[in-house]
Image (cartoon, rainbow, N blue to C red; front, side, top):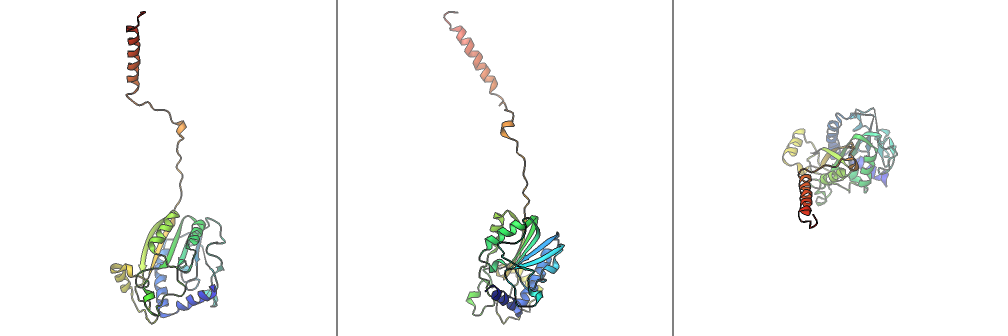
Length: 260
């Protein structure tokens, strides 16, 4: 079942609409990976071939893990096959992780994000591509024969994804929305960068997809001085009245003592 779904997705990406989307996402990821350095970059989920996005990484190593292989040539196959929610990786071992529509196809998005948080190093970067549940492509169910990729049944909104990542104590660096074209199979998708700029400026909510980037926070411990080591402080104005009251009491006893 996983192999069949993966193959259907790869076939969709070869349609005019899918190819146009992939070209746009290549530019989006190229900009997002600019300035991301380190030893290891990991892509979870196959979207295109295994070099579609990884060719833009500036880390020493890069790899792609998917849940199944395709029947296409070796360039379209992942480097490894495994479960996204149980990665065969050590904790704190990856500098950057890319999720290209991976959450759109998974019914366990929380488990995947927990694994991402586990394997990311301190200050590690996360980049997520996702289809917007609303907008032009969010209305796909109202359009007969809509061109949404097959199997993308678990769309997550930007707001919800931000909430989930903030619960993992990740810092949201930014979001962008892209691809303003109708999800119709016959759409030749001969748009331009000018059309994309107009969409981002005037109707961003109608975009088909979004890109979200986040960074894993570094937890720092601030030493707190123990309370039992603190020296007691004398509150000004309390000691002197107490002394006066004590002296007045002694004078009173002397004055009214019948045996004095």
